[in-house]
Structure formats: structure tokens, C-alpha cells
Length: 139
Image 1: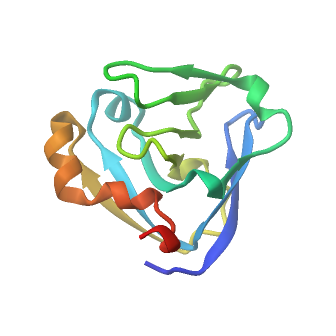
Image 2: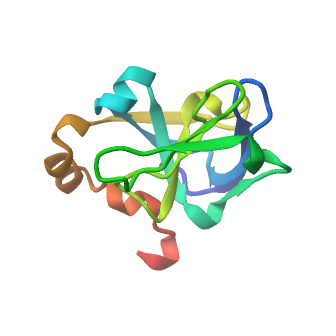
């Protein structure tokens, strides 16, 4: 993927939750089949947490849902219900950005990979997803 870092903006449907993320204009996104992602039709890309910034008063419109190991923090807007980002179990040091919540015009290429969330541990070990939240300096 392209390593030129740029700013992408996005957020939820009602626009009360807004954020900016620093990521390449070409990303690897993950389509997961775990119970939560498959119900939401979620496809996301992961960035290091220091490259994600909530804007304005967005935090006051967020609520969080957890289940299972309670490692993943599924954040969603209290008003419209959209999960525009969350803290994934695979990368608790990063942020999973919902692909369809990125404002149009800055992503030029998306490679979608499958993540077998129903067989989480084996998929985690096979995909290399853990490195998605690392910066080039920390690799």
C-alpha cells in the first residue's frame, strides 16, 4: 500500500461525531465475520491511536458497547447509532476506522482482506493484523 500519509476526515451519519485520521490514501481494510461486524456489515482499516483525533465536542455524543473479552470498545453515536470508529480487539493500541464513514475524496485505493472473526485466534495469528496499529518507527 501507499505510504504517503495524509489527512482523512469522517464521522457518523448525523455528523455529531467527527474525527480526523492520518493514513495513506491507499489502505488495507478488513472485512470481518465476527458476530458484531457481520451484523453491521463493517469494513474497517486500522491506524495507530496517535494518528486518530476526535474533533469538537464529539466525545459527548459517544457511547461504548463491549462483549466477550471486553477488549474491543465498540463506540457509536448516541444520536444516530453509527459506529464510525472503535478500538478493535486485534489492535487495542489502535483505532479501527469504518471505511464507509470516511468523507469522500481522499482514499484512492482500498484493498479489502477477510478476517475470520468467528475463528478469531487463528485469524489473528495468520493475518498479521496486529502490525496495522504500528507506525513505521515502531516496526
